[in-house]
Length: 350
Image (cartoon, rainbow, N blue to C red):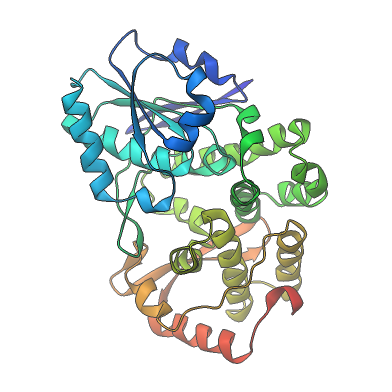
């Protein structure tokens, strides 16, 4: 078990890698604990929940809305929660997003932490202090920055994940490698079979390396005012695909990464050989579903939270392991989308 600390001006977060979820009790206050989870997680893991009042939501992205946050805040009040209470998010990325937002606004903020139960949340969603819910078709448009006191990642909990959810986490792991660590990218590539088998001996070190990438970026830019934007690689296009087609987040990001990598070649920032490497690893990992970009994609991107004064902060690549951020006009993105459609791109065949 290893510890990783994220220290920022807004607070400090301690990440426990591959620690038994039952040990979360030692990280909690003696009383006033409220556990936010979903029905699936409760069904699998209620026997290892610590003591505390359990507040349950429905699973899935459809739960990520303000109505859920309001309902949970009402339940906290009814259960006697106050400013000294502690909120424990026990679940995957959706649970962590919701629990973190509730903790950041209930009575103007209460202490909180996470037990992360999915690969997506262990490598990405639970780490870094971002909280958020969706507004209609727009992803994570309402949210805050608030660091959890701790994130406990028990890799043994990954054994119950459905295949699509497991692949979703692999998508985010590959993203971390693509933006920051070329060696990790190649190590993932050569370990795909063992990853698919959920071999803990290979998963544990890969997860930790991916987490260390995100932790380093967050330390440097906790509120995403500059360098942290590289963590959004693949998300501008991926969020649209996720919302439109209802596919898991990490799989949508994988498709979005290929589109963004194609754009990196189109802008002249990256050679085509690098695109082919990314394409090959994602294809080998079984992630490419190849959904079409919708006709209204530019209007959807225009309302993305990465939009600033009519410009979009696009994350592109120089190479595998080296991401850059470019401010691009919507008109330029529209030109790329037209090129992408007209050339009938099928990147993994391309």
